Image 1 (cartoon, rainbow, N blue to C red):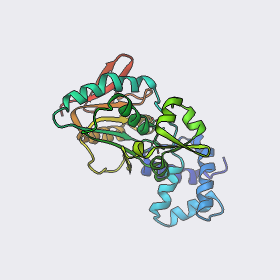
Image 2: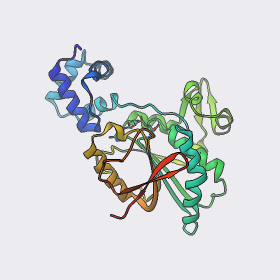
Image 3: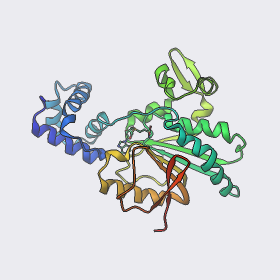
Image 4: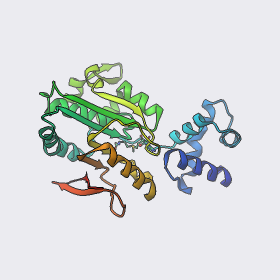
Length: 274
Ligand SMILES: C[S@@+](CC[C@H](N)C(=O)[O-])C[C@H]1O[C@@H](n2cnc3c(N)ncnc32)[C@H](O)[C@@H]1O
């Protein structure tokens, strides 16, 4: 590792305070590599000079860029297909029956990366619930990263990205080809509202949500941070709402107001009385 230990320690604390992610010592080389691009982009010759600038000044924008540079943005269309099957066939029909009087549906893809999860949800609604035309439906998609949100809003994906989980017939139906990229058609994009939201900080009230997908992000947080986010999230959900977290994540061991439920081979959580 060429990054000085003191610089790594400084960066680790900065990233944790910005995004909640705690970097292990083995991440030092990746950190240095990713921050070399940030340093270059702001005209600095090295990561060492980037650290010097961050130590000298309270530069909120630069600190955010550093945190964003080390986030893991791995995602794909219809990731964990069984979850989308459960949502389509077992969860949304219940929500729609419950909300039939007010014709209102709110879905939040929190930590959506560059948008595949939110577009998957929008396609799912188009396929299975096409007769909800007179409903007030909002899919909110958010992420910490400004770059990810910009990309998600654009809705343009490479051939390789669409090859990951997006069936060819859905690609043809919902996307337009632009050179080597596929862009979500305007009617798909307009079903989603994009926001930059850092889950560590208070977020604007956008609910109450019937369904929340908070997947593959909790694993980066320590238990007190998870608890804090999940308690605040409870306040943004309808009392009869549904929460899905990542397949490799669990709320076991956390003191949070949710009840674990299983449908077929999927797990979700329902708000518990506070
Ligand atoms: C691995 S991706 C998960 C994407 C998608 N939910 C999925 O499951 O495919 C994790 C995302 O969490 C975002 N993230 C990390 N820390 C965050 C925070 N404090 N607030 C909001 N988003 C955060 C990252 O920018 C990244 O896009």
